[in-house]
Image (cartoon, rainbow, N blue to C red):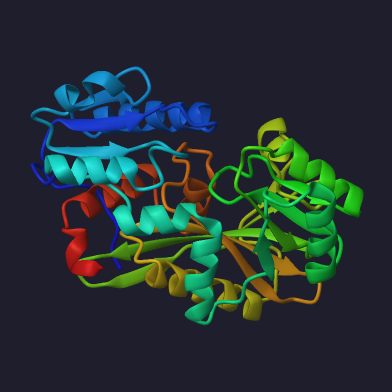
Length: 324
């Protein structure tokens, strides 16, 4: 699979860089948007930066006449299929996955069901019943999954709201603190947090799987606080055995295809202390800063940041319906 620079006139212009938004990952989206827009400029393209939060009321007007939309944005309202549906209604080509993959990928329980059916190993888990008393639900979760468990929102990115519960009291606290959120619980597996990027050449349907990246944190949990607080050490390739690397890459491609992702995706795993590979979730619009996880993996694989952006742009020019 060849990934390289754009040819003159290959990408229709101007390119709308949609960023920002109102989700809890707004700051990460804005960082990605700035770097993408700057890179498009150096590549000779004409970016039109649109902040989904600031320009929401006039989004259709701002999109008038654009060649395609580059989605440098994450979280609810942008990564969950809603923005993709609007763009398809308007007839605007866009980067990343389509409506179905975006909506399902954002719902971790639905995504786990689909990839598990495709043969990918996932941690055992369940939805938290908010109609039940917190104490009753904590006892049910402890009986069903054992302790400790991970509790997190079903439809949220960036590890936002993720908590580790070692006792039933911790589970109660997590449920009460997440009031108003649709939560899920998963068996806690100590191990290595590993991400795998998948790039697909849609013209040939060839997948290029990037070297796995490991994130090491003080408590072994790749949480929102660890990601944003600088408490992570990154290793790429991940410090795992060659057989484990192959298992990670195979399961990442299997999940990408099962979820009908388009052009590129990033998949998060736990490699347990016993060496088992467990899929956690997909990022259909992963962060795209030069120091972000996807760019780190691409760099180790010999793919320059500009060529990664070029690959993502090319994906918008191929009808995703033909690859569903």
